[in-house]
Length: 305
Image (cartoon, rainbow, N blue to C red; front, side, top):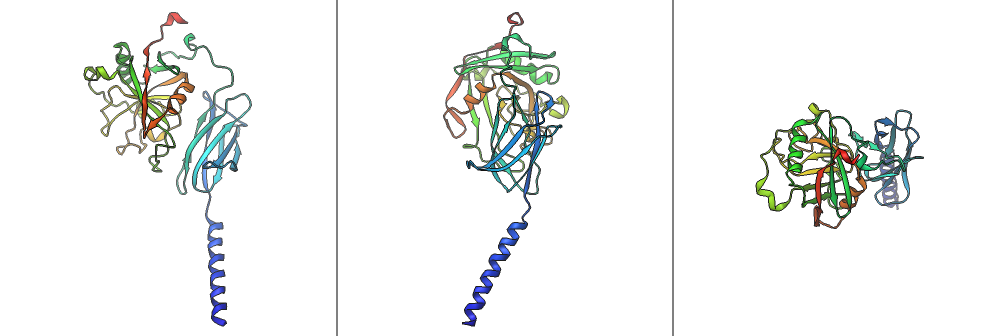
């Protein structure tokens, strides 16, 4: 009888100890800044949902500096951003871990304020507008000759040579086909495209890597950047468009083991919804099946203004 009492007491103590340790486990922190354009946005509601659960695991509101902070248990989250006058934004596959910075920055689009893309009103001095026509709509890119002259010149050489016309968007990453390996390789959402396959043997030599530490450009939602191999100076014609912020691709980030990052050279100024539509097309692994055709890729002529 006494032995049974001792065993029960020991079990109760173990359960109490486990519960106490769980209660003392520090919450991980997810934080970031919400902007519209370059301006921080206050009063934006940020909600985190664990996995596919509908119950809110944490909520916060951005302050005057646009910054929010959520204390969450470690896990993989779906995070939503909403506020009056803005289109809501959703980020999926957000990995939150302990003892590591968990940063998620978002740029919100104002509701109903998109300008006609051909007007070039959103193209800045030093940028060249390029239009990519696809079966799902057109994507308008501002190519930054001012800050990334080498990479921009390379991309425009392929554009002007007609290499991207009849090219393909062939690769996508998203939560169902990309396994994050934090902290160096967090979840990533993008589409990647390249030139007309029939002209693959007529491309140009690889270009030197223009590091973001030199250009000042960052890998954020809507950024257009060159795909590269294991070595830094290997980019040729493939490019990708980001659908989330990826500081891991900036200089010093460790998505590439060498820490040199990728070469950002432009941004989508109209048609990010088309990019998202392409990303959600059927895929086998990360390969779009079938690839999405680039019907025509050309500069936007200023006379269309």
